[in-house]
Amino acid sequence: AQTVTQSQPEMSVQEAETVTLSCTYDTSENNYYLFWYKQPPSRQMILVIRQEAYKQQNATENRFSVNFQKAAKSFSLKISDSQLGDTAMYFCALYTIQGAQKLVFGQGTRLTINP
Amino acid sequence: DTAVSQTPKYLVTQMGNDKSIKCEQNLGHDTMYWYKQDSKKFLKIMFSYNNKELIINETVPNRFSPKSPDKAHLNLHINSLELGDSAVYFCASSQILRQGSYGYTFGSGTRLTVV
Image 1 (cartoon, rainbow over the protein chains, first blue to last red):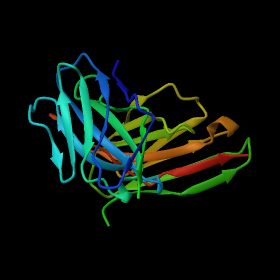
Image 2: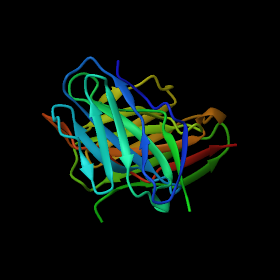
Image 3: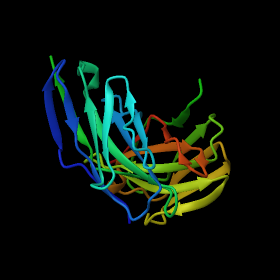
């Protein structure tokens, strides 16, 4: 079975600071994808960044980057120069290509950016 | 606009009633999903359809019945609503590729409140 764990229920930083959200996962498969989704107060689920497990290079999307450690099964999200609009719930998710073929989510981290 | 749209956005109903939530996607994706987000924000898959065929059916009460008339639509019908059914229900779609998935596109969610 696939599991995703986010050990930080809540985090809070000042605007313009850098923040890192942690995620660990477990799967017995070699081929999978990892995602970070953002859910602002509007409730919409927004894809932030995507990482293919077979790629060693860490994915980057503007101010968002990941630290993918495959051996440790760790997938953290770094937000640089944080902005007020980054305030949201952040979910880490795992998709396996064989087997279940469903997106499995972590419990989420509530991130607050303070002015 | 290309999107996943679900209706209604809000639904308040009494215990024992039957209700439906509709979902449509115009992204040309071949797979659609229903997820339930509980009061603690945890997201869990309920159903998945690929080209109108049910492929994932998690341990969901029989009162929940999905229907997919075509690959662009996936509706959720709930019979005999209970207080515990109160949650946010998300529809999502994805194109399943041999090498994986680019991620899911989510609708804006339906907040169901059973009173």
